[in-house]
Image (cartoon, rainbow, N blue to C red; front, side):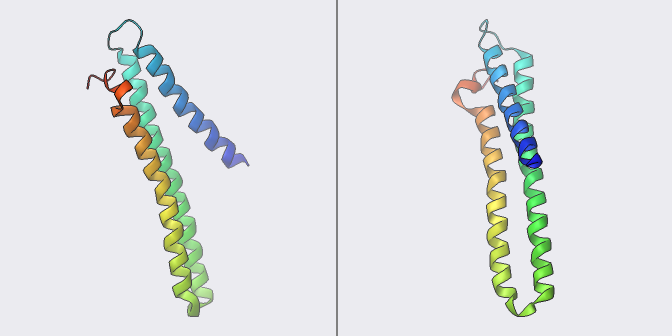
Length: 116
């Protein structure tokens, strides 16, 4: 439960920083350097935290698969297929973080703020 709370708090922090930056960027019509910095930090956090979680997840999956194959080598094929499936699911979360960062940096409402 504690890990979920930390993850949820971090996600809310990233979204909150991005929304504050977007609100600050549209005031006055000029490019606000602080808003650009906050958007860039939010984009970096979305990729970095997603990659961190993915790395931990892949490490746990791979370690447990190695332990399972060491205990019962006859079913190594089934364990390997399940391990690859688990790694693919964990890796998809990192891709979601990358998509969020690209949206923050290059989407239409934010592109004008960043001068693109």
